Image (cartoon, rainbow over all chains, first blue to last red; front, side, top):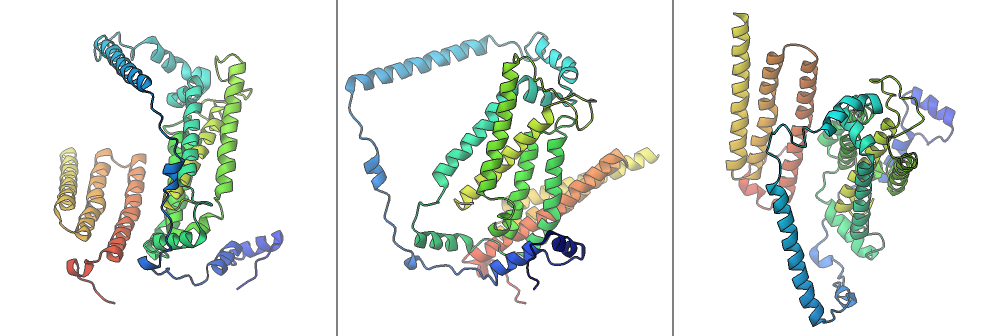
Length: 316
Length: 107
């Protein structure tokens, strides 16, 4: 086995001569002849204490009879009022398919007529969600981030359990997973590049054709999950670790927030970008829409993968 | 004349594809054991999809859409059998009564 060369020129030469992938060699050395871990017997499981202390830690309920009564009555009154208001609104809704409904109002006509001119986006939906209603999309990406933060808080096993128990659970969890499955690996080798390229295509073409950040990011995340399923965590850690997740998510959201903040300070009328809008229909057109799509796609892809790995293992 | 022939071919392929899909649907819901259900599900995703794709190609004629349909077909042919294989492997590894339900060929 060739030794891993750090010299860039030697590595290029190695690559040109179809030599061993140095990272691949490292991986094989690290993995060795890995066998499926045997199922530990139930009796061997280390005894962990039940988390009864949580109940003890919870704040004790203090009794406020008057407050409880008022709270109940107020809650019911407010709910009934809300129901009444909603029913009233529902009764006074315009007829379905009527000519003077909100759907056929001037707002949608305005979008259809002016989106291409004002935002440069051929795909009107992208023009609306990233430009006219960009604030809403900003909130959506932050909701995704808050969701994954909550999952990290709840599911992460880092520093939660003692080492013995963690090894036991890992072995028990991993016994049934498809390891070194030749069929899955071959299919993944063919599919993952296609899926990733397709995801990038959806993101980059977001302002030209149906698609955009959210759908493209979901495709990217699915490709990453497929790769992880076939080749295991060690291989994914070459390209995607917790550090990557942290930095990519934070930087993407920061960029979006800055762009949106700039938009507010310039009057919140229209997403001014200093970038020349270019010819509508080109990839590099429509100003800030392309970077914003890319940013949203990265956030969604990271969130998808993090959700998967958190629920599966509780760790990256 | 040619138009009638084309429509007849299209209808033939579509109906047979739908028949295969219906068979697979009934099989997934009616079979008792998981391995049999995987078998039924895999049939609809491969043969049924092939017939329906051929019908769609005949209907639209040969153009850019044909390539897209073929891509979809290739994607499904790659993924569906692999997922069936993984499911079957999981069943064979986790089910305690696997011997009683299915015949195992030793190689």
